[in-house]
Structures are given as structure tokens and as C-alpha cells.
Amino acid sequence: MPSVESPASLPISGTARKQRIAWIDIARGIALVAMASYHFCWDLEFFGYLEPGSAGSGPLKWYARGIASSFLILVGISLVLAHGNGIRWKGFGRRLAMVAAAALAITIATWFATPASFIFFGILHQIAVASLLGLAFLRLPATLLAVLAVAWFSVFLWAKSDFFAHPALLWVGLSPLPPHSNDYVPLFPWFSAVLAGMAIGRHLSTSGRLERLARRTPGDNTVLRGLGFLGRHSLATYLIHQPVLIAAVYLFSLASPPVPATMEEVFVQSCVSACRAQASELQCTAYCECVTTRLVDADELASVYSGNRIEETAPLLDAISGQCSVEAGFNGN
Image (tube, rainbow, N blue to C red; front, side, top):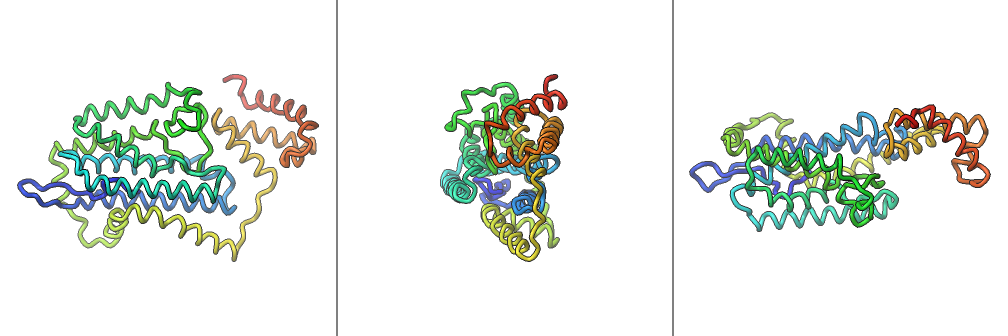
């Protein structure tokens, strides 16, 4: 994933020359490979090879969050490396414009491709905004930056309000219910990862570890050199990899179509996805499986699933929902 100041370089003492830090490029390359592996799982779900909701729940959910955090930490480190001793406005502005343009392109493309879950504030939007906001914190010491990172994250835990549920404020991230989007990385809590990266970058810089790291090279290791290449071209890699993966899965689906999910499976997964905003995944799964089983027993699942006979099935659905809420333990919350 790109940072606004992508070059991982720093001035070497006593010279005006800058030496690129290969290991930061490699770290960014590893994060890009991890991101591609997650997106591949998302594509498999999209085409029906994985159960609906797989990419947004369980281990894959936390895998995705770890990947996003690693990118944003690297953004913070890169900001300190590039501008900690003075903002280089020309380079910063050029790369900010590139990231912002790419973010806008993602929004437009997903608006047409998946309008119900288009990306209006994803990782690229976060990087652009966080890079601008991060300039205000550049001169702070590492300890204070670390404290601010924790404080920023804590706001997400106690400051949610219906005020932020307005569509114009969803990018802030303090709405009680998250919006439906294929990539949602709002200001709270995610800017805390950038602050944490800035704290790491400031510590490395002031401790002298950064110069020692710059003088260590990966040598002729082919894998590390490949990862470094991806890290140096992170924005291009980000923009290109997903269309390539989607095309590959699509071509595979023509030769070996996925087995269609049953109505019961789709109903449960859709129910769990909607329920997760208000309860734990374990409770939601128990509740949704209970509702599905009782609708099947009443021979009304098809009617509820299709939306037909809404007025006729509403009393039954309300009764089943109440019974299953008790069984799933919602009344104890």
C-alpha cells in the first residue's frame, strides 16, 4: 500500500545524499502480498467459492485488520523519515495528489461495480487524509506520539454517537453502526496506527537505529529483492493486483463453476452479516440458524427470503425472532 512519501530514505550523516532503506520497502512489499492474499479470498467469496460473509468474519476479518494496520504504521514511519526534519512540499504534494486521484478512481469504479457497498473512505482515502493530518504531529517526541496513538484509539471506544451517522460524517468513524462498504477505514480508530508508526519512526531516528538499518542490505536474496520492488511501486501494485486477481478467478469460474449455495446458507450468512453490527458473531450465528430452522419447519423460508407475502409472514417472523433472541441470549445483554 502506498504512503504519500513513498521513498524510504534518510540523510546519511555528514552528506546531502539520501540512502534508501531497503528493509522498509521489503516490509511494505510483505504487506502488499498479504493484502493480495486477502483480496484473493474476497474474490473467491464474490464468485461463490467461499461461503457468503467469509472474508468479513472470523480469522479473515482479523487478518484484514492486521494488514490495514501494518500499512498505516508504515505510512507513519515514512512520514517521519521523509519530513521529520522539514516538510519537502514538492514531493509531498505530488504523491498526495497521486494517492488522492487513485482513491477517487476507486470510489468511482466501485460505485458502478458494487453500488450497494461502494468504497467511499477506504485505505487510500485514509492514507491521503492521515498524511495531511500527520504533518501536525511531525515534531513531537516518540513517547508523546505513542500516548496520542492510544488516546486516539480510545475515542473510538467511548465517543460513538448518532450525530456521526449522517452520510456526510461516516468518514469520521464514530457512527454506532458501520456503513456497508467493501473497504471502510475511517479516521477513528485508524489514524491511531499512523500515529503509532510516527512514534516508531521518531524513536528509530533519534536512537540512531535508522542509520544502522539503512546500511544493512538484503544482499542478493531474490525473494527479498522482489518484495522490495513491490514496496517501491506500492501504489501501482495496489491498483493493478485486484483487477488481475478478479480476472483470474473469473476465467477459472468459466471452466469450473462454483457449487451454488443453498437458500438456507445464503439466508443465514446474510442474517449474520446484518446482525454483527449489534452483537457478537457467536450470538448472531446462533440466532440466525435458529430463525432459519424455524422458518424451514414452518415452510415459510422461501416467502421471507424472496420478500413475498410480507404482511402475511410478519407476525410469524416476529414471533420466531423473539423466541430465537431468547435462545441466543440477547435478552441477557
